[in-house]
Image (cartoon, rainbow, N blue to C red; front, side, top):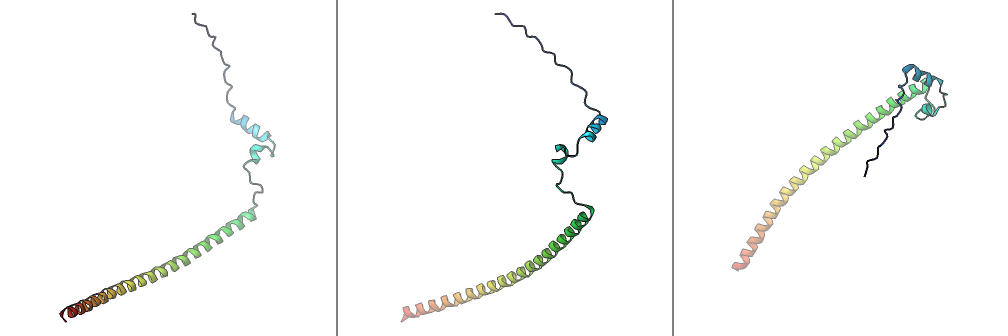
Length: 118
Protein backbone atom coordinates (compact mmCIF):
# COMPACT_ATOMS: atom_id res chain seq x y z
CA UNK A 1 0.00 0.00 0.00
CA UNK A 2 1.35 3.27 -0.96
CA UNK A 3 0.78 6.52 0.76
CA UNK A 4 -1.11 9.06 -1.12
CA UNK A 5 0.63 12.32 -1.63
CA UNK A 6 -1.51 15.16 -0.38
CA UNK A 7 -1.17 18.47 -1.99
CA UNK A 8 -1.06 21.26 0.47
CA UNK A 9 -3.53 24.00 -0.34
CA UNK A 10 -1.99 27.41 -0.08
CA UNK A 11 -4.45 29.99 1.17
CA UNK A 12 -4.18 33.54 0.04
CA UNK A 13 -2.83 35.95 2.61
CA UNK A 14 -5.34 37.85 4.69
CA UNK A 15 -6.01 41.42 3.73
CA UNK A 16 -4.74 44.11 6.04
CA UNK A 17 -7.32 45.42 8.51
CA UNK A 18 -8.88 48.75 7.58
CA UNK A 19 -7.29 51.91 8.85
CA UNK A 20 -9.09 54.27 11.21
CA UNK A 21 -9.66 56.68 8.34
CA UNK A 22 -11.27 53.93 6.23
CA UNK A 23 -13.55 52.93 9.12
CA UNK A 24 -14.60 56.54 9.74
CA UNK A 25 -15.25 57.05 6.03
CA UNK A 26 -17.42 53.92 5.98
CA UNK A 27 -19.39 55.03 9.05
CA UNK A 28 -19.90 58.54 7.68
CA UNK A 29 -21.07 57.13 4.36
CA UNK A 30 -23.68 54.87 5.95
CA UNK A 31 -27.29 56.11 5.93
CA UNK A 32 -28.87 57.15 9.27
CA UNK A 33 -31.43 54.34 8.94
CA UNK A 34 -28.67 51.70 8.82
CA UNK A 35 -29.56 48.86 11.24
CA UNK A 36 -26.19 49.26 12.93
CA UNK A 37 -27.25 52.70 14.16
CA UNK A 38 -30.92 51.98 14.83
CA UNK A 39 -30.74 48.59 16.54
CA UNK A 40 -29.67 49.91 19.94
CA UNK A 41 -30.87 53.51 19.64
CA UNK A 42 -33.81 54.78 21.70
CA UNK A 43 -37.02 55.14 19.72
CA UNK A 44 -37.45 58.80 20.68
CA UNK A 45 -34.44 60.27 22.46
CA UNK A 46 -35.48 62.84 25.07
CA UNK A 47 -34.81 66.49 24.45
CA UNK A 48 -32.94 68.73 26.93
CA UNK A 49 -36.14 69.84 28.72
CA UNK A 50 -37.36 66.25 29.01
CA UNK A 51 -34.02 65.22 30.53
CA UNK A 52 -34.32 67.99 33.12
CA UNK A 53 -37.86 66.87 33.95
CA UNK A 54 -36.65 63.27 34.25
CA UNK A 55 -33.91 64.42 36.60
CA UNK A 56 -36.37 66.39 38.71
CA UNK A 57 -38.84 63.49 38.68
CA UNK A 58 -36.04 61.14 39.68
CA UNK A 59 -35.05 63.40 42.57
CA UNK A 60 -38.69 63.66 43.66
CA UNK A 61 -39.07 59.88 43.50
CA UNK A 62 -35.88 59.44 45.51
CA UNK A 63 -37.13 61.97 48.08
CA UNK A 64 -40.46 60.16 48.40
CA UNK A 65 -38.68 56.82 48.77
CA UNK A 66 -36.51 58.33 51.50
CA UNK A 67 -39.55 59.67 53.34
CA UNK A 68 -41.26 56.27 53.09
CA UNK A 69 -38.11 54.60 54.40
CA UNK A 70 -37.92 56.94 57.41
CA UNK A 71 -41.62 56.47 58.18
CA UNK A 72 -41.34 52.69 57.90
CA UNK A 73 -38.22 52.71 60.07
CA UNK A 74 -40.06 54.70 62.76
CA UNK A 75 -43.03 52.31 62.65
CA UNK A 76 -40.69 49.36 62.99
CA UNK A 77 -38.96 50.94 65.98
CA UNK A 78 -42.33 51.57 67.69
CA UNK A 79 -43.42 48.01 66.91
CA UNK A 80 -40.13 46.69 68.32
CA UNK A 81 -40.64 48.71 71.51
CA UNK A 82 -44.19 47.38 71.79
CA UNK A 83 -43.03 43.80 71.29
CA UNK A 84 -40.33 44.26 73.92
CA UNK A 85 -42.94 45.50 76.42
CA UNK A 86 -45.25 42.58 75.57
CA UNK A 87 -42.38 40.14 75.99
CA UNK A 88 -41.56 41.57 79.42
CA UNK A 89 -45.24 41.33 80.37
CA UNK A 90 -45.36 37.70 79.28
CA UNK A 91 -42.22 36.93 81.27
CA UNK A 92 -43.79 38.50 84.40
CA UNK A 93 -47.01 36.56 83.81
CA UNK A 94 -44.99 33.36 83.38
CA UNK A 95 -43.15 33.95 86.65
CA UNK A 96 -46.46 34.64 88.46
CA UNK A 97 -47.91 31.49 86.93
CA UNK A 98 -44.96 29.46 88.23
CA UNK A 99 -45.58 30.84 91.73
CA UNK A 100 -49.31 30.06 91.48
CA UNK A 101 -48.58 26.49 90.26
CA UNK A 102 -46.26 26.04 93.25
CA UNK A 103 -49.04 27.15 95.61
CA UNK A 104 -51.55 24.81 93.99
CA UNK A 105 -49.13 21.90 94.34
CA UNK A 106 -48.57 22.69 98.03
CA UNK A 107 -52.32 22.87 98.67
CA UNK A 108 -52.85 19.60 96.80
CA UNK A 109 -50.08 17.88 98.78
CA UNK A 110 -51.50 19.14 102.10
CA UNK A 111 -54.95 17.93 101.11
CA UNK A 112 -53.62 14.53 100.13
CA UNK A 113 -51.64 14.28 103.36
CA UNK A 114 -54.68 15.25 105.43
CA UNK A 115 -56.84 12.71 103.62
CA UNK A 116 -54.35 9.94 104.30
CA UNK A 117 -54.20 10.78 108.01
CA UNK A 118 -57.90 11.00 108.49
